[in-house]
Image: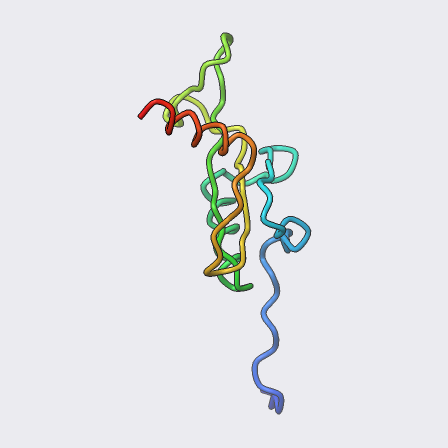
Length: 112
C-alpha cells in the first residue's frame, strides 16, 4: 500500500562519486582516466559541468589527449583521451591565470 511522504520527495541520491569540493579552488587539476574516473572522458566532463552549475561554480575543462610514441597528441578519433584538466571558479568570477597561461599570453603579445 502506498505511504504518504509528509516531507515531500526524498533527496535524490548522487550518481557521481565526486563532490569536487576539494578541487573547487580556482586552480587547474588533472584527472586521469582509469585512476581518477572510469567513465568516458565525455561523461566525466558532463558530470564536472553539472556539479559546477548545481553548486554555484563555472567549470573550465580541457581534454588531455593520448600521445603517440613520440609524444605527439593523438586525435580523439584515434585514441580515447587520457584525462581532463579542470578548473572550478565561482560563477561570474574570472579565473586566475596559471603560469603556463601567463607564458602563452605573454608570447602572444610579443608575437603581435
